[in-house]
Length: 244
Image 1 (cartoon, rainbow, N blue to C red):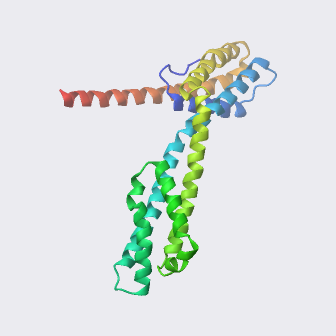
Image 2: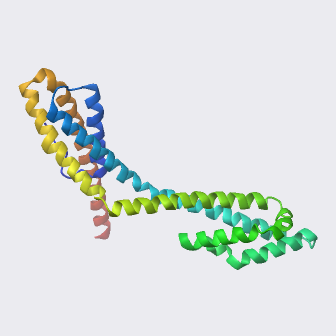
């Protein structure tokens, strides 16, 4: 039986394990306690590893939420600024008053750290939503809608930030993805594949169909890994060539 290559990275181990689990449903093996326990162990550890891999997307999600918040924040400043540049009028006077409030915070709060920007956005929205400013806000077309947009994007950011904090706390108290991936690879290589290979010879009618498709799956994954490593080597050689 082929084994997962020693240089397989976390995502490649996940892909191989998920492939084995899916194939096990198409080629069921019953009345084998060792196999059942090993497959159950693989499934549980695979789910754990997938959770850790997916956690990496939370940082990307938080960045997207921050960009959406920044867009809504800037829209408020631009809308009020445009109204301030009109000819003198009662509406323009109200816009100037709103602009004074905005200037307490400044559009540059969009460039601050996540936490400082969150504090600034909440405080700014609280000021703008004061009852005595209701007429001032209404005097500027779309401003109330823009404020609502910012409230929503801030709320969305807060949800993602909370998820990231919870995930960070969880990961600090558990094994890293790379450690789990190595353990999973060891189980597949040393416990499952060796057993399948031996049983396929002893009882081919029961084990060989599944052993063969798993062998093909592992071989295909290893071939892709070799292609990846060869591509990295070629890229490194090109860089070295340029440097020399």
